[in-house]
Length: 357
Picture 1 (cartoon, one colour):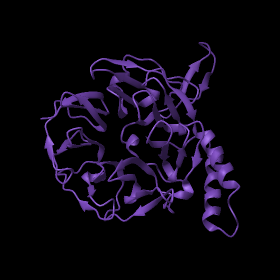
Picture 2 (cartoon, helix red, strand yellow):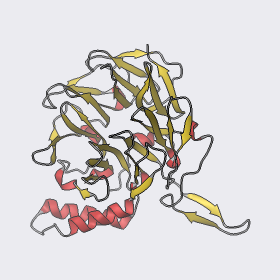
Picture 3 (cartoon, rainbow, N blue to C red):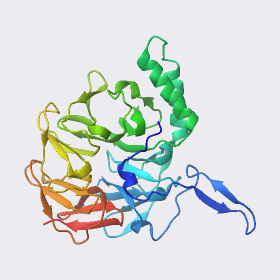
Picture 4 (spheres, rainbow, N blue to C red):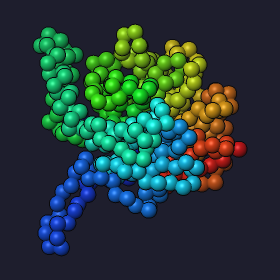
């Protein structure tokens, strides 16, 4: 588990050090873990790097570095949320206007019941690692190589502490959801995050590749990851099964409709399926930068955004894309609807709202 984690949150300079609080002018600084240090309120939070965007009903919510979460009713005026941690956040999911989840570094899982205004910690990396060690420690048998490997990996997670990030979160409703992350980390909850069950044994990922994104598309749920990994949810088997993709580069995201799935990633690569993931066609995006944000809008158009600040729009369900002009081209990591024909883009320079024409 020594290889680097190359996920979209690392496309920007990420502050991994914890806050240092001086006890006095002459005393040694006291280490304060980002897992217990609340996010600092700052007028600059909206201009700091932000990694995630989501709609909570008609409210926009964004999250990013140092535990910063902000929300807006109009995309112009933003309020910083009360967040109990200061670790970097990578993803958001709101299955309803009030209930939402955020995940990020140090294995953090946060929950809100008021549309993103205040948050509570449900899980952290230390708790997740202990959960994995307990769960897989009792299920491994000497004759079962796969179970023995899971036990070994889980023990490694526990020994290393809270250093493995969750990279995406998706909730189907207020009770059922998944969090996914580095080195095949995947947990499922069926009670709104009060308890979590490891699912690493329910994923066709023998190389323990990083899981970057999980989203519904093409009539099912897909996971996208490094080295061209695509997994499809089999509800009957309660398992994510492997899907063959003619591409071996890292994939950062998934978006789609009930009839179409689109995965996208490094060097402008995107692949589209209209048969539930059985077959995939390469989409000519016309760009070479990594694609790090995607969205299917209410009007059916598809938006992709890149780490170079390019914004692409498709009006044929993702079959082809055209680049559109934006007022500000800045590295983008997430896209969301912003109303009145506009989209919100979160990235290196914070959040900006663009009218796509």
